[in-house]
Length: 304
Image (cartoon, rainbow, N blue to C red; front, side, top):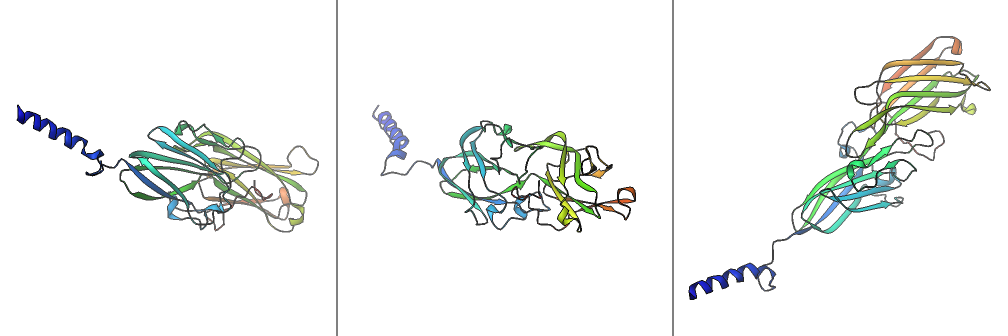
């Protein structure tokens, strides 16, 4: 009988020992995380945004929305509304005392423009960018970064924000003097980009630009930032030219080529008019991956 009582006492002693300050501590259940966030550089050829990074985090970003999940549960959401002081290559996201487990950090860059961001954040699958068919367009970036906390230490990671837009630059050589406006349409493009999945909802994007008369003697370029061409589709380029006081175009042509707008890449399209203007021979040329800085700055009136 005495032997059984002693055995039971020893069992209780070892079971409770992890909460006694004088004995070995309990196994750790919390850890710290440090995530260095970088912004993908324009025309990075890799799908890995860390392969080519901007030298300053705020070069492309002026605000950022982030959401932290443990499993499928939203733990935290916040907006960094002013990134003007974030001149270092990385924005450091740190959290301490996180329970062991699997987490996901979801980020939208330049998310505060009206109508651009959809979803409350309660479910990360509902977070998406809506393409603004009117108004000024900005750079948009997204990041979905899963990580695991599994040690009572500080775990450090690097993550990259991917640019979700492609850039189309339309160049005009020898644009006739009577032309006052240029209208460019691209079809087969996406209008939605879910943070956690691909592009959806096929649409056509049309932008109309006034001709800059002071620059008429030089070649003129117009920039359009768009979501990429929908998977399995092609993009056709429609050009309309208007003269002053005319409601109908004086020139219209569609180039139904095998065009594709790609994420974070430049599609460069040049229209060259001969000496006879819109009545003469017109040449279209499409180039990819030309050298260009890639800035789409909402404050620049030449960029839409």
